[in-house]
Structures are given as C-alpha cells and as structure tokens.
Image (cartoon, rainbow, N blue to C red; front, side, top):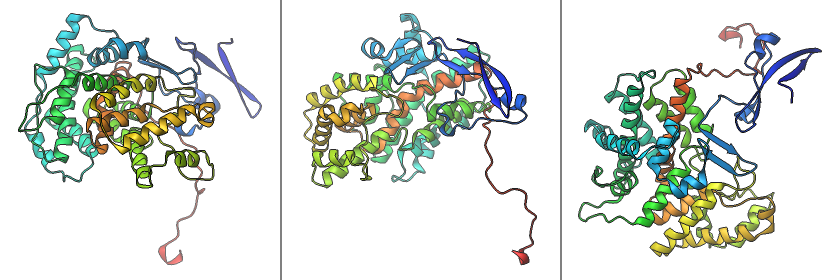
Length: 428
C-alpha cells in the first residue's frame, strides 16, 4: 500500500501522508489540507469519517464486534477484573499490581469526603430537577472547592486530581438519587469496596442495616466495566474538546455529563424503559410492536436494538445478558415491564427480520432491565452510565493534555447570505 493519498482539486493534485494504527486502521493526515490548497476543507457532519485524535486507550471494530481497553478484550476484563482494576488500566495504561491496586483503593477512600457546603448547593435544587442536571452542576461546583489548576506535567498532581474525582463522584451520584427521594445523604464505608459502597450509599435506609447482595454487586461491577470507555463518542469527544482549551478536569467532566444526557447517547437506556412503559400502557402486546418496528411507514422506533457503531453485535450485550438473567432470577421480580422486555428479546432473537439485519438487543436494553430490577429509578439510568464512563473520560482528558494536543477548532462550510448593505430600520 502507498504511504500517501492523492487528492485532485480543479485539475491540481495534492499528496497527503497516510497513517496506520496498531490495528492496521488507515487514516489520511489532512492537517495541511487548508494551507496547501488555499482554503479547501473537508466536511463531515457528525464526524463519522473524521479522526479527531490519535489515542492508545480503546480499540473498537464495529464490523467485527470487537471492543478492547488498552489491548485487553472486554470479554476477558468483564470476567476476570473488577471495576477499579479497569479504572487503573484505562487511566494509567497497565493493569495494576496488587500493591498498586491496594494503594489506589486506599487513596480513593482517603479522599471520599465531600465538603459539607456541597450539600447547600444540592439543597437549592428542587426535587423535580433531573439527576443529570444536578450531577453536572455538582461536578462543576467541585472546581470552587479545589480551585488550583492541575499541573499536567506533574505525575503527583495529576494522580491527586484523578483520585479526588474518583472518590467524590460516587457520593455525588448517590446524593442525586437520595435528594430525589427525600432520603438523608449517605457517605461510604471504608470497609467496603468501591462498587459495594455505591450500592450502600444509594439504597441504605436510615432505619435499617444495608445487606449487600453479591449478585447485584457483580452485575453493577460488570455494567460499570462495560460502560467505562467507548472510543471517541459524543461525550468523550466533548470532554476532550473542552479540555483542549485547558479547562480543568472537573469542568471538562461536567461537559461530558451534559453531552451524555441526550437520549441519543447516554439516555438510550432510559428511552428503552420509557418505550416498555408505553407498550404496557397499550396492553403489552409485544408482537404488535415488533410488527410496528418492521413497518417502515410506522413512526415507532424499537429502542435498545442494534447499535450505531456495531454492525454485527454489541459484544457488551452478550456479557451483560448473563448478568441480567442472574439478577432477574435471584430477585424473583414480578414486573410486567420486565416481562415485556423479555418478550421483545425472545422475539427479536428469533425473528428473521431482526436476525438478518443484526438488530440484536444492545447493552442499553439489558442495562435498563438490570437497573429497573435493582430498584434504580429510570431518571437515574443515565447517571449510572456517567459513573461507569467516568474513568474513560478521565483517561481521555489525561491523554489529550499529556500529548499537548491543540485546542479543538472545527471548520465550517458557510451557506448563508453573501455580503449585503445595511438598511436603516425605516427602509426594511
């Protein structure tokens, strides 16, 4: 293969170098295009064919259904690692030794207190506020309590900032839910692991002891691992482009939370449950809705099936389906919504229309089922996604800053009015 690409514009040829990634992905390096051609740019709405950066964090092959963190397959990580090991891997590049993991966990626990004044900010929100709006605001507000900027050239400074947000973020997540339900705010327990603490802080009632369910702990651990990073998606790209202005870690993360809030991104698992609710209200006939989904003239969209990136299957869905089955079996939940979900799943996996088009249930479908069964309210689903995606955002922000990437500044193709003379108001 040639090491250059040739572009011809108005009869003149221009050569641009090709770059090849470690997984043999090929990219045309167009950073000199505009200068070389006297102003020509590319246009690619949604950046579906545009690489915004070089990254060593996550490899994704949608056609083959491959997802790897730092070279490790998502299947092996979900089976053999716990969430904090994956967090360390994503951020620092290697799986931790036992000594490194113990120190990492101890350092996180040491910082797992939130300034009491944060409660005053939380109190100012009405109960009706969406938890994602609350979480974004509280994350951004941490900047006021830790105003000094992170010296990205100092490993110690960077490590302290990373540990601080990893420690405090689960508390903010739990508080957003407890605020919504009028429950007293909870802190974690140093005797518990990271994921166990999340569950305790969210669900402990003031008048009773919280008892851990290992099946729920395992399911949540896997969900967080599966959501930890996913290449240059909308929220991750937002974190990187905000950070490219040298915005601090906390506000860059807050921008990612806001991007994740959208129903086409992190809100997809919430959309799944809202769809299931609508089917239930209409009598719960899954066959009727599968027929509607196949009817191109019908505006109904089947949420939680297929994936924008994965053209074959979502490898995360295969893993989390097992956890979903275990949770439903262990809890013995009797819920018509979950019955509808299982009915849709069964029909989609056996219907030739869906099988031929590879419209399999995706990770959003199963994560919504698990969260529903666990008792997590639907408006908290995207918050849980943010908790899982946090290490990926941190890793991407850290990589971008350490590589000293330039500030993000996309171009545009102007299609508005050409020059016009100004008319005074009496002549308009």
